[in-house]
Image 1 (spheres, rainbow, N blue to C red):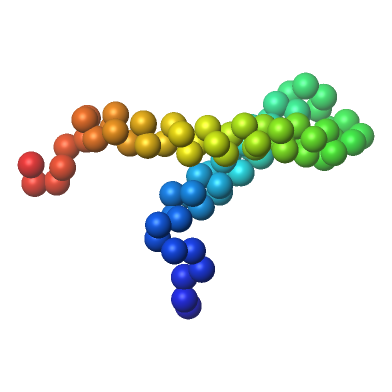
Image 2: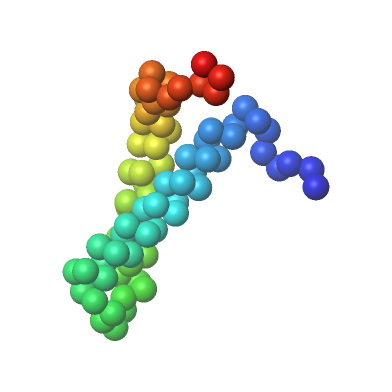
Length: 80
């Protein structure tokens, strides 16, 4: 199967998917803790998720390179 995304855009696709899944999960937990499985739970969840994702996606794109640089200072290379 031929890849759909060029390698130079991989970090953006990674940030897109990571922020999508993480914000979906966290907003679902927060919505459940706030209202429980009340009628309209799914709509409440989705209306909480979308604004969360809009913030999470650019945040991941900015923060991920910073975290990688920090981790490179602490991670031991194999054979070193």
